[in-house]
Image (cartoon, rainbow, N blue to C red; front, side):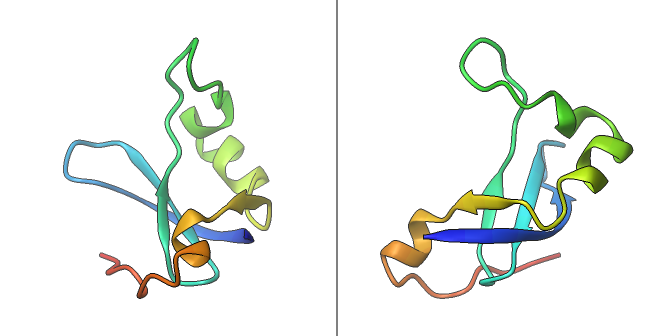
Length: 69
């Protein structure tokens, strides 16, 4: 299920995590060549992606909302 990005935070290892409007969290790493997300690297890039849709597998599984810092 597609869900919009509503915010971001970093995990305990410093990796960026997208907060989705559904209440789930999803890592958004830039880890070429497997994951190409250069927008994650800068504050401007992350801001430009607010509202963009990501596939939320947790919604598909009816998982409970994630905790947020």
